[in-house]
Amino acid sequence: MKLTSVVIDDEPHAAEELELLIGRTPGIENKRTFNDVASAIEYLDDFGKVDIIFCDISMPEINGLDAGEILNRQCKFLIYVTAYREYALEAFGVNAAGYLLKPLSQSTFIKKIEGIRERVTLKDRAEIQDGYILAKGSNKNSFTKIQTIEIVYIEALLNYVKIHTTKDFFITYVSLKDVEEMLGTKKGFVRISRSVIISMRYLEKVEGNVLKLHSAPDFTVGETFRSDFYALLKRHSINRD
Image 1: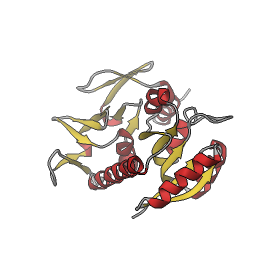
Image 2 (image 1 turned 120 degrees about the vertical axis):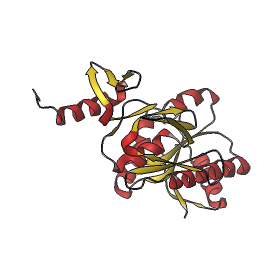
Image 3 (image 1 turned 180 degrees about the vertical axis):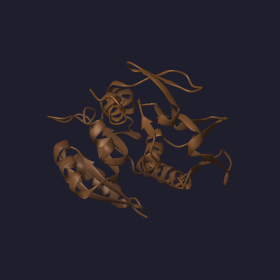
């Protein structure tokens, strides 16, 4: 299966360079190239989600970082391609899957794509079945079966996640965004911040922006996630005034 991508860069020569690298790399196909974020989003709204968005950071109107949250909804992996090192921390702050510095080398690019393909494979192996997930262990062909009904919350740990259940916890190599997508078919799991997903089954109390879960530390709902979270609470409230 080929990975799909789009490129967003307002510098024509930089966009062409990236297109050439993609064309020379096995296992990936670039669908379209855009010189601004708005055009790319309009296209993806019609085309649907792609595997990877390669996006420049310094662009007119909407820069890549400001558009990070929107772009993340349109792809599985957001990779920034820029000539500036100083944006790295901000890039990972918007859940970017990678940060490549211009000028790009073929070897660096191929290594990044191979890493993405490995993450896709791990995600597929941890695919949610009816009522449970399979979390890959540290050894080859090692998996732990986790009943979704027992998951209390999940927290991000750099390139890993820690899955806390009513009985134990498990650490597996996958991103929180991947887990969120996998849990998308299961009701009752809600992302409340950049680093935490909770199970509403174990939510006991909400006090302002602080959530109290059974047998778990208190969590604060992140500002970006508050409107969706409180809309969910309202839908389940017996008093909606």
